[in-house]
Each structure stands twice: as C-alpha cells, then as structure tokens.
Length: 370
Image (cartoon, rainbow, N blue to C red; front, side, top):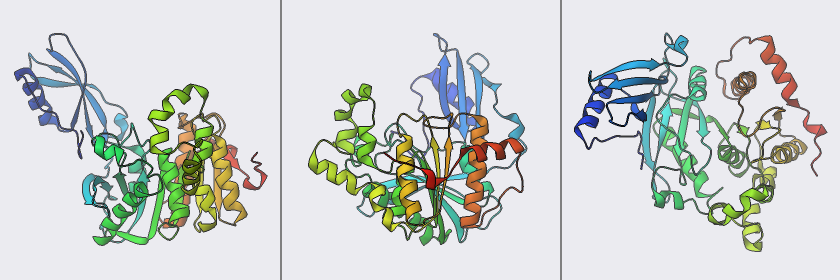
C-alpha cells in the first residue's frame, strides 16, 4: 500500500542508519541494490522538483555519495512543486492525487490540465519528477493527477472498485477532483482540458464525449474509442489472461449483455455529443491499442465537424521512445493547449521538430476504416 508518498520503516539497526542518512538529503527512497552483508546500498531518491538522483551508501561511513545524476543541466532551473491532495468521491470512496501549480502564479482561476494516468492496473501517479507535468506547469497550467479507483498500490478493495466502472465511476472520480479544485478557487472551470495516454487516453475520449460540457479541449495518447474492438484486437497470446483481468473489469465481448454494456461505455458511440477540439497521438505499430482505435474516433468526429488534429508516429508503438517524436509531441501539445486554454507557447523550435510534426500529420478526410 502506497499513500501520497512511499514511506519506508526500518526493522533493523543497519537499515535505521541508512534511513537517517537518506533523511538528511530528502526524498522518497527507492532501494536499488545491496551487498549480501548489507554494508553498501545503491539508493535512488525521488522528489517532484528534480530528476531522481542515485547515491551509494556505505554503512561504515554512514554517508551517501552521489553516484548518478541524470540531466544535470536542469539544476539551475526552478521546477513546480507537487502537492498531495485527498477528497471523497460522490459515492463516498476516499480518493487521492496531486496538484501542481505553475511557479510564480497566484493560485486563483488558473487554466487546468486534468492529466490521467494509464493502466489502470499496474500504474499510478506518484510524488516524483515528471517531465510532462513540469512542461504543463511551465506553460502556465495547473495540473491535476488523480489516483482514481482501480489504481495500483491503494489496496485490493480500491482496485476491485473499478470492476465494470470504465466510463462510469472511474470517470466521475476525475470530475470530482476537478470540482475539488474549483471549490477552492484554484481553477477557471471554463478553461479545463483533459489529457492522458492508454487508459488515460480512453478517459480523455470519455471526457470529450460523455461530459462534453466539462472540457474545453482534449489530448489523447493511444486512447481506446471502442472497448469491444479493443478486446477483439488483442493477440492470441493474451487470451489465456483475459478471464482474470479484462473480462471481470471491462467485460467479455462474447457475452451479449457485456458486449452491449461495453459499447455503451465506448466513446465512439457517443461521438455525436462531442463539442470540443481533440488532439490525437497514435503509434502506427501499437499492438495494444491499435491504430484503428484512433482512426475510428478521428473519422467520426471529423464527420460531425469537430476539429481533430491527428498525429501518427510511423516508427512508434504503445508509447513514444524516439527523442524527436517526443519533442514533436511536446510542441503539438503546447500549441494546441495554448490555443484552447491560453497558456504560453515557445516562439520557435528546431527545424527537425517541425519536420517530424509535418511527417506525423494525418489528413483525417483520407482515413478509411474497414
């Protein structure tokens, strides 16, 4: 079980000494490796305001020695603080998450990006440095991250509360988080965007189509638009695991009642309700959420004259690993949100980033879905 931050408790004197040394530096502890006699440890410390730093700890000296610091050129910059929050969902379930506010801005009536993590199983938002969060805060946005029901690390009961709640209580958990910030005056409710990848992409499309009055725009990374075709597209090697995972939590498309329910929770079938612009990122080689999912929703919204910007990375899968692709994604995101929410946009970027963006752009009216 992990609350707002991971906490470690010592059960032996040598581990107590290690934790005391760590506390002098500060951060959430991740024990990487230790010697058999536990006299030396490799320890990584996480904080939201700088990339995680790895140290070597010696029991003999009782000190931490810096071993590896990624991206040291970021040291002079000021990054936004991430604050844990907690609130109660409309059905009484306790929820938690994080809010990151833009540095130097008064926390009143800010534009908000609701950033939804993937999974939901095997994933959660954490109190740690996240480049996408810092980019958004730097551009002037408050960022809300919710560990909605189904999130890993908050107990079995919390995980099981997500059964058949895709597009239902899992979505209202997010809306209740936005309401929590609105009630405190932090955000301007007319300038709220929803954004996320994988499950977070599905949640983004749900926000766009199920609650269109709540979001001024949406940014979808590899999001599912049709739950039935998602499960039917899974490779044969996944089939033995579905009865223990996807079927109880999402539904079994072979069962007529489940199939109807899954379609009812699919954004594609609610495309008529959408009113706000959508930015889509999709990997052409994604085996989990296939290109068809993005094609379907892009085409459906375009036919209804909803503005859609569709960027397809020909060399990427489920998540973008190429640095040039990542820079292009950041550029497209800041431009899209700047137009929608009014945040800051960098005046110019390198020519290779512009070239990558142009190569990814899909003309939606040319899409053909079989």
